[in-house]
Image 1: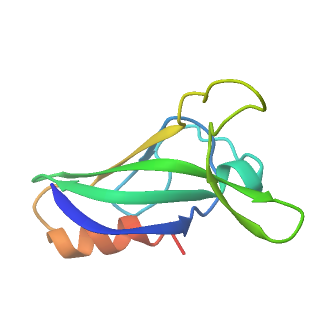
Image 2: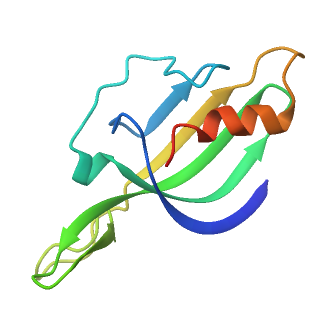
Length: 116
C-alpha cells in the first residue's frame, strides 16, 4: 500500500458506481455509466495498492456544493439536515496492468490518466 498526499481529483467520464474497472490501456473494462459531474465527477484518493498485475485505488466520492458564497467539495454522503450523517460514498478503482510487459510506473501513469 502506498500512501499518497490526500488530494481531490476529477474523474474522467464521471462514472457512477462503487467499483470502476479499467484495462491495461486505461479504458473502462466494464459497462460504466456516466453520471452527474457534480456528484460523480470528483474523488479523494488517499492510498494506492500495487500488485504484480493490478493497481487498486480506494477513494471517497466528493460532491461539488455551494454554500451560497462559494463552491467547495463535500464528501458524498455528508449530513442530511437535522439528521445523523449518511454513509460516506466510497469508490474502488481497479486497473489490470497486463502480463509482464508493463512496469509498475507505466501502469500507474495509465491508470491516473483518468484523473485530472
